[in-house]
Image 1 (tube, rainbow, N blue to C red):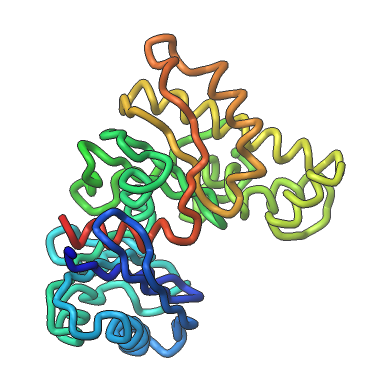
Image 2 (image 1 turned 30 degrees about the vertical axis):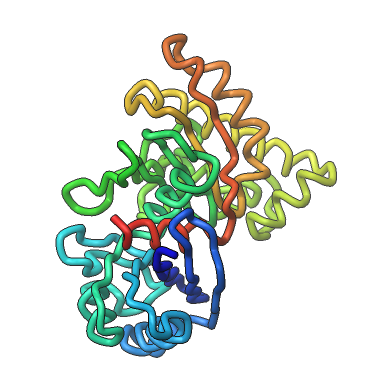
Length: 295
């Protein structure tokens, strides 16, 4: 039997580790809260402890999907938000390699999710995939010939900062106004609903209210989904993927409107490129990190 590999998912609230076989199946997993406020060393210690529990005596490689922009040459963090204080500049690959005694490959978490989905999820058997992750913010990743496209700075695929109609009054996570993330994300839903109603709730609550018939919430979700779908239709013509995948906690609420807008706007030459929901859920980053280790 070919040795399985370990995938690590380091997020702002939790760190998960999984043993993944060479077909992309999760065999076993561990999880613990991420001690983000205790600093990078504490975060790395937790990741290493969980990985050690699964590695045992195996000699398999380790892959990491982490929040933040990852330098593709060094596996260090070029930039990270305050969800992981002090994470910017952390040499994740080297630090974990020292702790684990083996080589470690590091990739951004959304890039890892795209690798996972293209290997063992909704993008299986498709060489070219565009994935958009709709959560509190909006991330993206491009897979070409089965490999994630990192770009010059490790940030290729950041679709959230494209200009978007209807976002002029909404602030993006980057601090500017008018970006796609400011509309088509959990924070965007919350901000738009507050403007519409004067009520401040989470994006998840907006989606729940839309599902139960709240008219204002339905309008917000419909607008967000339509903008997302139209933008993805334009990106298909630019990037020429085999499929577009939508992942993340807020994806389900936006997909109906996004699918309708996508179908209406996608150019005829790309009409056969499907817009699909991702299927791996919380395992996507773990599976993709494992794939990065294998590669």
